[in-house]
Length: 104
Length: 244
Image (cartoon, rainbow over all chains, first blue to last red; front, side):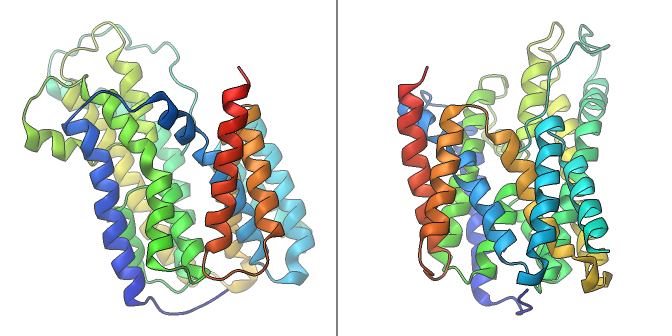
């Protein structure tokens, strides 16, 4: 894992994303216009599925190669729990516990 | 991006709160269980941020200024990949666009015409608060003191996120590397990704995105994620328009 110190880039990013996110929240809430077109909504509906699984792979890839087998197994266990429970806490707990057990 | 089962019939469903204070308390109560779920997520974020070299101050700043868990986690991962500001901001914005839809849906629920008040309320909008408020406002007795309910619930969730972040950042700094705290990051995304796969279109989007991601050569600085997500969005939208 990188241990680089935060750069001005990150600070600028935090501010920009913060402002943009607030603008997103406030725009349709303060000035409700006609709701966005069905087509836009259809695309937006796919965003979580298009981005989140890729982030799973990306973060798993960042692990040290020797740890990958245990981590993949632990990830599968966590995915099973997520499927059954839709519970973030349960997924985290089972995933970490599985990792520790497998790494013992 | 938590999808919570809601709403089930509540004991206080039909109650017409006599005062703003009671309504606020109801908001707190309704969001308390959700807040208990937000807390570990916040801890995971703080710990992951610390693992990557961020101080508690930066983590806290992110959680206060952005206040959106999935986007914050994505930012961490992209920053680790040395992504440019353009990529970082774009991905975070795309992930957070749904908050605008929530705002649009909630706007008509609040009679207040004060722009300043609406502007303040908007900051609290999250998946959980949106779901909880919508459910409440649809109940008999749910017309009154909506702002109080919204603020009560919203602040509860907000506090949980900030508290979790600080806990994670400070605890994460003390955790030994052998603990594998960095594994928390993929776990959080698994917890968010699995419930997001609700239908065939979602499945197609995910599959296309992941395949693209692993097939891409070593492109720098967050580009593989952006390209993979774009492919996933296109495929998912096409499948979505073709399946009922």
